[in-house]
Length: 208
Image (cartoon, rainbow, N blue to C red; front, side, top):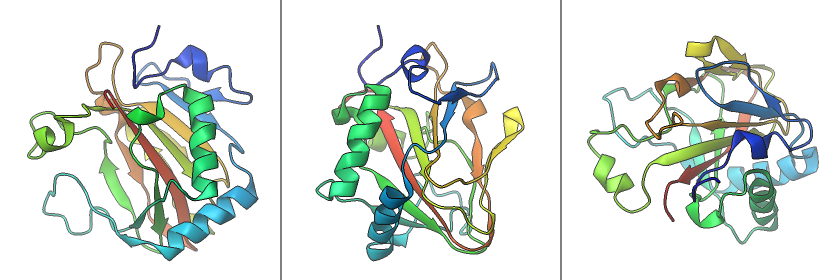
């Protein structure tokens, strides 16, 4: 039985077409064509209408660490509501444990350097972000388009880079089985070399 705010490999593997990345270091799955191109185009339009500079939880002094733009998506938008329903069907995680959906836009030269999605225990803002909802559990990320060149997502510790494909979803567990955060989830949103990249990100928490 899974805990609130969690899901399981067994559940995820029931989704048609899902693939588990063969590594003992982390739980990481991909689903090609999770969203259709029309749905992706609608989400891209929402991102373009409300984007702002991206930020990070614990500033590290590197002004170029995350250079993308971000959009907090309105749950009332039909394309957003539909996506939330798809993600719930996939993971079974109570929506109350999910942060609001975000969209990101990466122009030429923009990136998100190697980072983890969990809040660093003992970090400057750890208590601020985790006091109520707890640590991040799973991450779901969806590519909405395919830039002409670059923009892959590299998981360095497993030597795997995923290239953007319209509608493809990546979902991974940010922790070990015992609940400790997993440094092997370190990943790099690599620079776009030509074109523009759009992605959706959904983070889940231990508590509502």
